[in-house]
Length: 277
Image (cartoon, rainbow, N blue to C red):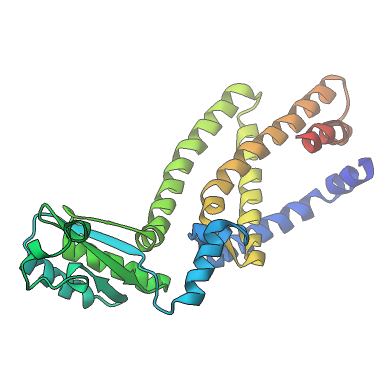
């Protein structure tokens, strides 16, 4: 460990340049990393939900509806007009409503009331919609459907979640970082001996975060949970390790050791705490 630390300190300028360069490269690579917003992809192969989905795909060639839309306070003619508009949306494969189950041109009193209530109840119409699986088309289709039905009506389903999650997740990450970074910096200012130490911490951890996000390209894609929480967790955990090292360095300096010897001893002393955590 002493030889390793001594080598780093001896070539510290070159190492800093290399890591800054790699951070810049990884910052660019991070934009190429795909983000997977599908929960089903992370289920075990033997999970009941996974088995059920695989069975449905094998048994039925028809795509599974992935979106439900409710339009409030509409008559049956209005409901049929909305259905035609929804069917014309690019990216929509199929729209199902009551008219696909019963003959709505006959008195509805003659049909099964439970069936009617599933699709049309208290002047509220429920549509079952199948949207294509392509992420770009799905987002465009969801946005257009929202424009058709307006903000007063409702829609749900995996198509909606997949289309809107990227936007909301990105927005949430920005809000979290805007809150966490200033708070972390203020706490460090209050608990360290120099104003430059918090700056050094933030720069170092920022580089580590960029390296982590860029090297995720090796996996091709990451889950949206990792994308949302990974940087914040890395900031919190890495900050602890940095503080361990700084405290040990300060203790060694207080004992009279020079800068290089104090850092070599600090790395050796803090390694155990870092590895255990």
